[in-house]
Length: 290
Ligand code: PAF
Image (cartoon, helix red, strand yellow):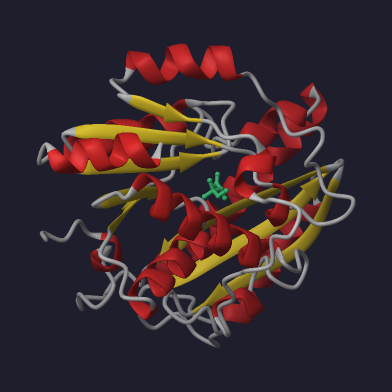
């Protein structure tokens, strides 16, 4: 892959990159379609990265179907698929990791210790191997996107990071490879994530700004569905991820909920109806020209 990346660079090609763990759905394909717009060559990786799974998490059971993934990738114009084996990425003596100080402390960090260290490390390695000009990530993993953006800035990596809006099923459930774990009944309960975010949006539109009240409303809605167990519901600053008391400008509402044995995440940016500023308005994730 490194040789192929060098060859592409030598011929003056720009490389757009979409890192994935495979088992593609429309959300992945949206990332690839976005990637297609940003590079002469579109490279994706398929790698279920062991270092971002904790003990007892679903590393072994994570859905995999590389043949199906390959034909879907081809259908959206992917040029190169990099699908390394774990031992090619981490040899026995492997000992170097990337740790961010603050952002991993919030949201998913406490329930998934080491997760973002694994993500930041593998993404850095993939960047070094694929040598992209542009890399594309989904906003469903909002915290991951923020962490990658911070890491790229901190380490002065010369890579433009592009965020792509969440892709949802017709009824609103955010697409995720993990949705495949859900039984029919659990699938119905999984809708509570989106519904609670929608309810919060409506509550904010009615003029209620109190974060606690929004969190309480969302939690009650989620708990009214069977099989659900809340990991967290947070209303926080969209840049630092620190909790806020009030929604006075664009504010992140993020949640993680166990539905049966499946942990699902979702998020939205809450905006007060009279907000006219432009501080966040999506600008954090807007495509920047190089
Ligand atoms: O979002 C994912 O699929 C993974 O966390 C990533 C970015 C491919 C790193 O393994």
